[in-house]
Length: 257
Ligand SMILES: [Zn+2]
Image (cartoon, rainbow, N blue to C red):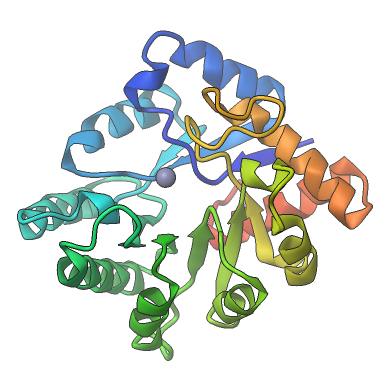
């Protein structure tokens, strides 16, 4: 069985004491590729170091996370764009809009998001979108790219079925992780409705660990728990859901093997 974790922050300090073991455990569980979304200028260095240490396993992205968009965002974007042009970057991300914690920089967040989508189109890379309390604002910007070849994923998808269908109609996949295992979540229903061809699997580790590790540090090896849940939802063999979601990820991120 082969799985791809399309969203892990394995380069964060949470993994400093046992990163080698975490990567090894994941690979042993079939998680052969892990995609690393960037956060800000400061996370570029540890992320690139991880991509060099785990070559061909941990693949880097370049982007500015919406909660890191502050007064200095233009400067940060400039530095991150340099990274985009200088190494084996697999996607633009994570980018998006987050109005849950703070709306102070809403205009800057929109400008930053639009700029990063332009990079994605120019470089023909998928965009990894973080959306929190911001679907209307996100779709407004995405409308501007209707006729481009923009594609990507709504990471940690948290919308309803209408939002899911709209995202899919615009060329996006839904990133599904540990939340699908939570008892109080209706994500299972939305996943079923969206269909297996429109989802990719992710952990968002160290965050959002699946049951029975909810609240603890998440890691990429737990992706097989997410896959088991997906198999249960579609009443299919785990090997089959792994195969389909992995193929979705390979195609979306243009990974040649
Ligand atoms: Zn993330």
